[in-house]
Structures are given as C-alpha cells and as structure tokens.
Image 1 (cartoon, rainbow, N blue to C red):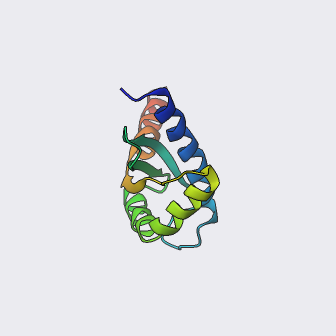
Image 2 (image 1 turned 90 degrees about the horizontal axis):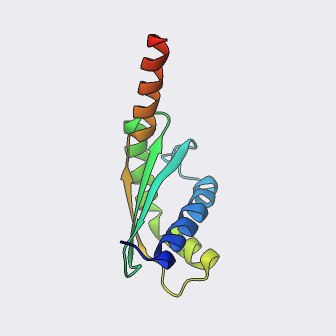
Length: 112
C-alpha cells in the first residue's frame, strides 16, 4: 500500500504530465491523449504512466512511442516543475480504457 506522500506525489506528477503533454511538439503524440493512471513505486525511482486516446488503442501505442523518445525532456521538465531532487524513470503504457468506455456507452444507447 502506497504511503500518503507517494500518493500525493503521484497526483502531482499526473497533473504536471498533463500540462507537459500539451506542450510537446512530436506529431506522434495524440493531442487527445489522457492519463488514465500513474503508478509511482514506493522508493519513487520509477513511475508507470498509463495513457489512453479517444482515437483508439493503435493511436495510443503510437503516442507511447513518441513519449518514450521524449522521455528525457519530460523527466527534466517534471523535475524542474516539482522541484524534486531526483525525477523517477518514466514508463509509458498504452491503455484502451477510454475506447472501452465509449463502446459501453454506445451499447447502452442502443438498448435504450
């Protein structure tokens, strides 16, 4: 179970990453990319960032490639904004939760 400090830092990382994603100029990164979940390890050395796109899982996977290539810049920005001594190593993972939620919404509309 994560401590309060780790959970709070995870939420801060999520907030700052959303802002950093808006500033990225890589064409592979989808502008409609959203962060689903941030898992920060207990020692705060690594962080898994689950991202999802409205455009689908394939677009999210392509965005992950763009984010992975800009991971150094993202880590530096994150460290400066949060005034951390060491920034965690970022691992970006594509997630299909938004697409799955949209499919459920469509099925519910068909029923009603």
